[in-house]
Each structure stands twice: as C-alpha cells, then as structure tokens.
Length: 248
Image (cartoon, rainbow, N blue to C red):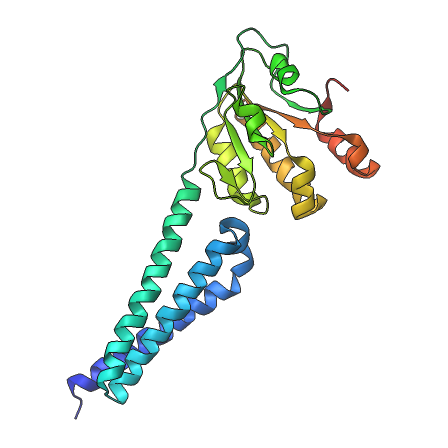
C-alpha cells in the first residue's frame, strides 16, 4: 500500500536528482561563470550549492533512516548553504548594477568626432583638452589621477571598491562601460597593458573590438592610451587597423 511517507520519499528523491542536475550544469559552465562573475563570487556560489546539496542529501537519508540528529542537521546545513548563495547573489547584483555617469569635464568644442583613437602616454590634462565639450569616462589603473580632475572613472583592480571591476572580468567590464556611455561620450582607456597582463593579448583585443564597435554604434568614441614600446609590432599593427593615431 502506498503511504504518504512513500510519496514524500519519492518526491524528495526526484527533487534531489533535479538539484544534482542543476549542480552539474553549473559545473559544466563554470568557466563562463568565472569570466562573467569573477572567481571569488563563483566560488561562493559553488560552496553554497555544495552545502545546500549536502543538506538535502541528509534530508533524503533522514526519510530512509529516521534520526533526530539528521533531522536537525539537514535544516542547519541547508540554511547555511542558502545563506552563502544569498550573499553571493548580493555581490553579483552589486557588480551588475554598477553605473558610472559620464560628464563634461572641460568646456569648449572638441575637434574629435565619433571614432576610435590611439594616443601615446601623456598627461590627462592633454587628453581632456582634446575632448573639450565632450562627456568623458575613464577606465584606468590610476583612479586618483583622474578623480582629482573630476573625471568619472571605472577602476580596473582586484581591490574591493564601489567603482572597481576585476581586470579578468572582461564581460562585466564591457557591460558596465556600454551601459554607462551614451551618445557623444568618449571613453578614455588607460590600462591596456594591465589588461593584457591579466588576460593575454588575444582576449584583450577581442574585448577592445567589441567595445569599439558598440561605442561607435551608440554615437560615442574611445581614446586608447598605448605605449608602442611595450607591445610587439604585430600587436601594434592590429590596433592600428582598428584605431587612428592622434598625438603620435
């Protein structure tokens, strides 16, 4: 005779198998998750899922081998797992909703039109002078330098900061820049070598091409600060096919 306990056990086994399938799916796409969310966040999510999965397993075992200890233990472990997942979700939300509003720093009229440009390392004041009257946003390794000039910035660093994004998280960085920039905005990119160091040239150039294409489509522009002495000639040639030199 089928009893309530039998139905409950079957339902919990099905739920446990489904949960195991979700965990396996997350493991199979872990590389994509790491790229978009960052290593620390993904580790938190996986830890939470593992703990919750363990708690649910104990819950199933408790239906087969009823013990008061197991009943208490499964609730405690599952709650801890959910808590860790929730904390990771808060971190994800914080990263996704980050928005930096571009603004005009210097009044005037710029001679630069919408486009993609290269410039050798020079003073921020010189670059801002070229972009007079334009809304600007800088992606940089040196936030203090630009903050003192009143330039809105995104800081590429592993330091925990409201305006910071890890250099290895290219997808969120791309998303944040695109969502922040609008028509007539120029993005000053001051951190190319650091991005290459962290991701390699191939991944970085793909990121830059995607960023350039979307910015131009939105009626915006980009100024990429490049020191030719620090890059291979073939890499410079690739950049020159997509960007135009100014102040060379």
